[in-house]
Image 1 (cartoon, one colour):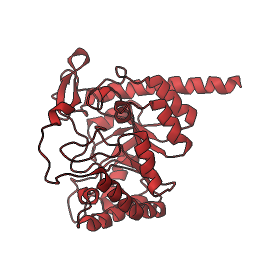
Image 2 (cartoon, one colour):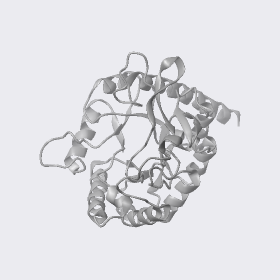
Image 3 (cartoon, rainbow, N blue to C red):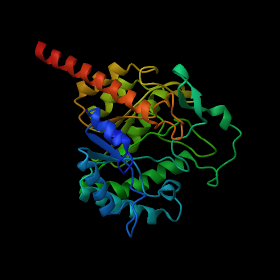
Length: 329
């Protein structure tokens, strides 16, 4: 496993602390702040960002961001324009040598919570979701968006994008819908389970079309996380991991510290090592801890430090177990 972190596109304190903690791999956004004639998905901003990471001793493994794509997801008349931009983005990623794109098919809004100030252990703040607060919420401007419509639009998108990804040698890592519940404000969510992710990547089969295993989302959905790891690893479809945890159900759940949720995290880590997973993994949606202002819920600094340390310990334990088992055979 390649332990990574999600960084801003310009150096900051997290870049320096990550190297001090022994993190060598980066997950980056699109460099929206880069000025000039280029769009952030153009070749040169991608190369510039990759080189900034390299200058800090970090290898950029994943872009976890997308050009505008809501028209693609909704299937509006403007979707073909967005698809052409997306194709060029994939081509540019390949030319820049960035191997994985984490993308999603959540229409209208991305990951969604009803609170970012839920108190957890020791008074730390986490995000949470209570579906009862959404039952009387008005429709978005998109109106009712059915599951059938989204499946059709996803198939249309993948039919055009997967061949481009194959040629560019960029792995498409599809993230599940978070929360895994449907609909929200009239907008359906189709990627709510391991079976749904399987259906999605089977639409246009390719060695370059796989998943981002967001443990927190699939744990919320009630999935057996070690079983999901084995299922997609056996197919070589596990490209990227969000290593996090939750407690609760799709109707009502909250984020947790890595050691305080519903998943046996050591068993999960052992599953990655047994499967031989050697891709990037990062902590995600960490608690906001004492002294932090919660200006960036889920992504404040102290919880990330805690998460990295916890994951490194699990990695060491799982590696030692695998080595001992190999020596005993």
